[in-house]
Length: 202
Image 1 (cartoon, rainbow, N blue to C red):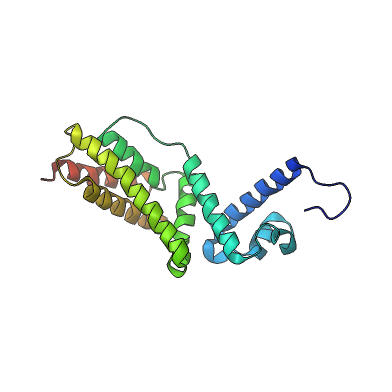
Image 2 (cartoon, rainbow, N blue to C red):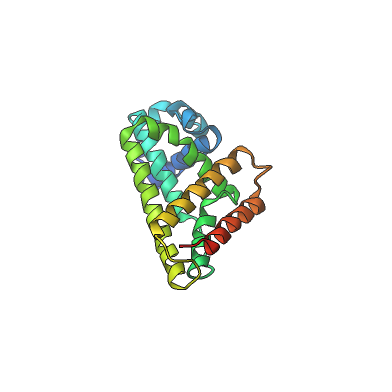
Protein backbone atom coordinates (compact mmCIF):
# COMPACT_ATOMS: atom_id res chain seq x y z
CA UNK A 1 0.00 0.00 0.00
CA UNK A 2 1.19 3.56 -0.74
CA UNK A 3 1.90 5.58 2.42
CA UNK A 4 3.98 8.37 0.98
CA UNK A 5 7.19 8.65 -1.00
CA UNK A 6 7.33 7.04 -4.41
CA UNK A 7 4.01 5.51 -5.50
CA UNK A 8 3.92 1.77 -5.93
CA UNK A 9 3.79 0.48 -9.48
CA UNK A 10 1.46 -2.20 -10.77
CA UNK A 11 4.41 -4.57 -10.70
CA UNK A 12 4.96 -3.81 -7.02
CA UNK A 13 1.30 -4.52 -6.31
CA UNK A 14 1.35 -7.84 -8.17
CA UNK A 15 4.56 -8.85 -6.41
CA UNK A 16 3.00 -8.04 -3.03
CA UNK A 17 -0.12 -10.03 -3.93
CA UNK A 18 2.05 -13.03 -4.81
CA UNK A 19 3.84 -12.68 -1.47
CA UNK A 20 0.50 -12.53 0.34
CA UNK A 21 -0.72 -15.62 -1.50
CA UNK A 22 2.43 -17.53 -0.58
CA UNK A 23 2.06 -16.51 3.08
CA UNK A 24 -1.62 -17.53 3.21
CA UNK A 25 -0.78 -20.89 1.66
CA UNK A 26 2.10 -21.53 4.05
CA UNK A 27 -0.06 -20.77 7.08
CA UNK A 28 -2.81 -23.09 5.83
CA UNK A 29 -0.40 -25.90 5.01
CA UNK A 30 1.26 -25.79 8.44
CA UNK A 31 -1.58 -24.68 10.75
CA UNK A 32 -4.77 -25.56 8.90
CA UNK A 33 -7.81 -23.34 8.66
CA UNK A 34 -8.05 -23.12 12.45
CA UNK A 35 -4.73 -21.29 12.45
CA UNK A 36 -5.56 -19.04 9.50
CA UNK A 37 -5.63 -15.56 11.03
CA UNK A 38 -4.52 -12.13 9.89
CA UNK A 39 -1.91 -12.18 12.64
CA UNK A 40 -0.47 -15.51 11.47
CA UNK A 41 -0.37 -14.43 7.83
CA UNK A 42 1.23 -11.11 8.77
CA UNK A 43 3.90 -12.91 10.80
CA UNK A 44 4.62 -15.25 7.89
CA UNK A 45 4.80 -12.28 5.53
CA UNK A 46 6.89 -10.14 7.89
CA UNK A 47 4.31 -7.37 7.70
CA UNK A 48 1.73 -5.71 9.90
CA UNK A 49 -1.87 -6.80 10.27
CA UNK A 50 -2.79 -3.29 9.21
CA UNK A 51 -1.32 -3.89 5.77
CA UNK A 52 -3.29 -7.11 5.39
CA UNK A 53 -6.62 -5.46 6.19
CA UNK A 54 -6.36 -3.72 2.82
CA UNK A 55 -6.51 -7.18 1.25
CA UNK A 56 -8.81 -8.86 3.77
CA UNK A 57 -11.08 -6.46 5.70
CA UNK A 58 -12.70 -9.42 7.52
CA UNK A 59 -11.81 -12.97 8.57
CA UNK A 60 -14.42 -14.25 6.12
CA UNK A 61 -12.68 -12.40 3.28
CA UNK A 62 -9.44 -14.13 4.26
CA UNK A 63 -11.13 -17.55 4.32
CA UNK A 64 -12.80 -16.98 0.94
CA UNK A 65 -9.48 -15.93 -0.54
CA UNK A 66 -7.79 -18.99 0.94
CA UNK A 67 -10.39 -21.28 -0.62
CA UNK A 68 -9.99 -19.55 -3.99
CA UNK A 69 -6.22 -19.97 -3.69
CA UNK A 70 -6.65 -23.67 -2.94
CA UNK A 71 -8.86 -24.10 -6.00
CA UNK A 72 -6.40 -22.25 -8.22
CA UNK A 73 -3.47 -24.36 -7.03
CA UNK A 74 -5.46 -27.56 -7.42
CA UNK A 75 -6.47 -26.69 -10.97
CA UNK A 76 -2.89 -25.70 -11.84
CA UNK A 77 -1.43 -29.07 -10.79
CA UNK A 78 -0.30 -31.32 -13.66
CA UNK A 79 -2.82 -34.05 -14.46
CA UNK A 80 -2.17 -37.64 -15.47
CA UNK A 81 -3.26 -38.72 -18.93
CA UNK A 82 -2.38 -42.31 -19.67
CA UNK A 83 -5.34 -43.30 -21.78
CA UNK A 84 -9.12 -43.39 -22.18
CA UNK A 85 -11.85 -45.30 -20.40
CA UNK A 86 -10.75 -47.11 -17.24
CA UNK A 87 -7.24 -45.63 -17.49
CA UNK A 88 -8.73 -42.13 -17.51
CA UNK A 89 -10.85 -42.95 -14.45
CA UNK A 90 -7.78 -44.25 -12.64
CA UNK A 91 -5.83 -41.11 -13.59
CA UNK A 92 -8.56 -38.85 -12.18
CA UNK A 93 -8.66 -40.74 -8.89
CA UNK A 94 -4.87 -40.81 -8.57
CA UNK A 95 -4.86 -37.03 -9.09
CA UNK A 96 -6.96 -36.67 -5.93
CA UNK A 97 -4.70 -38.70 -3.66
CA UNK A 98 -1.81 -37.21 -1.63
CA UNK A 99 0.89 -38.96 -3.64
CA UNK A 100 3.30 -36.00 -3.83
CA UNK A 101 4.29 -33.30 -1.32
CA UNK A 102 2.29 -30.72 -3.29
CA UNK A 103 -0.81 -32.93 -3.41
CA UNK A 104 -0.38 -33.67 0.30
CA UNK A 105 -0.35 -29.96 1.14
CA UNK A 106 -3.46 -29.37 -0.97
CA UNK A 107 -5.29 -32.22 0.70
CA UNK A 108 -4.27 -31.09 4.17
CA UNK A 109 -5.66 -27.64 3.44
CA UNK A 110 -8.86 -29.03 1.91
CA UNK A 111 -9.56 -31.41 4.81
CA UNK A 112 -8.82 -28.61 7.29
CA UNK A 113 -11.43 -26.48 5.54
CA UNK A 114 -14.23 -28.96 6.27
CA UNK A 115 -14.84 -27.55 9.75
CA UNK A 116 -15.27 -24.07 8.30
CA UNK A 117 -17.58 -25.44 5.58
CA UNK A 118 -19.76 -27.20 8.16
CA UNK A 119 -20.09 -24.00 10.18
CA UNK A 120 -20.82 -21.67 7.25
CA UNK A 121 -23.79 -22.63 5.01
CA UNK A 122 -22.52 -20.65 2.03
CA UNK A 123 -19.05 -22.18 2.14
CA UNK A 124 -20.60 -25.59 2.78
CA UNK A 125 -22.80 -25.23 -0.30
CA UNK A 126 -19.75 -24.32 -2.37
CA UNK A 127 -17.93 -27.43 -1.11
CA UNK A 128 -20.95 -29.56 -2.00
CA UNK A 129 -20.99 -28.02 -5.48
CA UNK A 130 -17.34 -28.87 -6.01
CA UNK A 131 -17.90 -32.45 -4.91
CA UNK A 132 -20.88 -32.73 -7.25
CA UNK A 133 -18.82 -31.40 -10.16
CA UNK A 134 -16.08 -33.89 -9.32
CA UNK A 135 -18.59 -36.76 -9.32
CA UNK A 136 -19.96 -35.63 -12.68
CA UNK A 137 -16.46 -35.67 -14.20
CA UNK A 138 -15.84 -39.13 -12.79
CA UNK A 139 -19.21 -40.36 -14.10
CA UNK A 140 -18.21 -39.30 -17.61
CA UNK A 141 -15.11 -41.47 -17.35
CA UNK A 142 -17.08 -44.36 -15.90
CA UNK A 143 -19.52 -44.16 -18.82
CA UNK A 144 -16.62 -44.13 -21.27
CA UNK A 145 -15.11 -47.23 -19.63
CA UNK A 146 -18.51 -48.94 -19.83
CA UNK A 147 -18.79 -48.08 -23.52
CA UNK A 148 -15.38 -49.70 -24.07
CA UNK A 149 -16.47 -52.81 -22.22
CA UNK A 150 -13.92 -52.24 -19.42
CA UNK A 151 -16.62 -51.84 -16.78
CA UNK A 152 -19.94 -53.69 -16.58
CA UNK A 153 -23.17 -51.83 -17.40
CA UNK A 154 -24.77 -49.87 -14.61
CA UNK A 155 -25.47 -46.39 -13.32
CA UNK A 156 -22.32 -44.29 -13.94
CA UNK A 157 -23.36 -41.76 -11.29
CA UNK A 158 -23.58 -44.47 -8.64
CA UNK A 159 -20.19 -45.92 -9.56
CA UNK A 160 -18.66 -42.43 -9.57
CA UNK A 161 -20.14 -41.62 -6.14
CA UNK A 162 -18.69 -44.83 -4.73
CA UNK A 163 -15.27 -44.18 -6.24
CA UNK A 164 -15.23 -40.62 -4.94
CA UNK A 165 -16.25 -41.75 -1.46
CA UNK A 166 -13.54 -44.43 -1.49
CA UNK A 167 -10.76 -42.12 -2.57
CA UNK A 168 -11.73 -39.35 -0.14
CA UNK A 169 -11.69 -41.84 2.71
CA UNK A 170 -8.26 -42.96 1.58
CA UNK A 171 -7.12 -39.31 1.55
CA UNK A 172 -8.06 -38.91 5.22
CA UNK A 173 -6.37 -42.15 6.29
CA UNK A 174 -3.23 -41.24 4.35
CA UNK A 175 -3.03 -37.80 5.95
CA UNK A 176 -3.56 -39.16 9.46
CA UNK A 177 -1.28 -42.19 9.12
CA UNK A 178 1.19 -41.57 6.27
CA UNK A 179 3.53 -44.32 7.45
CA UNK A 180 0.79 -46.94 6.98
CA UNK A 181 -0.53 -45.40 3.78
CA UNK A 182 2.48 -44.28 1.71
CA UNK A 183 1.96 -43.45 -1.98
CA UNK A 184 2.57 -46.99 -3.19
CA UNK A 185 0.04 -48.39 -0.71
CA UNK A 186 -2.54 -45.80 -1.74
CA UNK A 187 -2.06 -46.79 -5.37
CA UNK A 188 -2.42 -50.50 -4.54
CA UNK A 189 -5.66 -49.90 -2.66
CA UNK A 190 -7.06 -47.80 -5.48
CA UNK A 191 -6.20 -50.51 -7.99
CA UNK A 192 -7.93 -53.06 -5.74
CA UNK A 193 -11.04 -50.88 -5.74
CA UNK A 194 -11.00 -50.54 -9.51
CA UNK A 195 -10.46 -54.27 -9.94
CA UNK A 196 -13.57 -54.84 -7.88
CA UNK A 197 -15.53 -52.57 -10.19
CA UNK A 198 -14.47 -54.51 -13.27
CA UNK A 199 -15.82 -57.79 -11.86
CA UNK A 200 -18.99 -56.43 -10.27
CA UNK A 201 -22.20 -57.60 -11.86
CA UNK A 202 -24.61 -55.04 -13.22
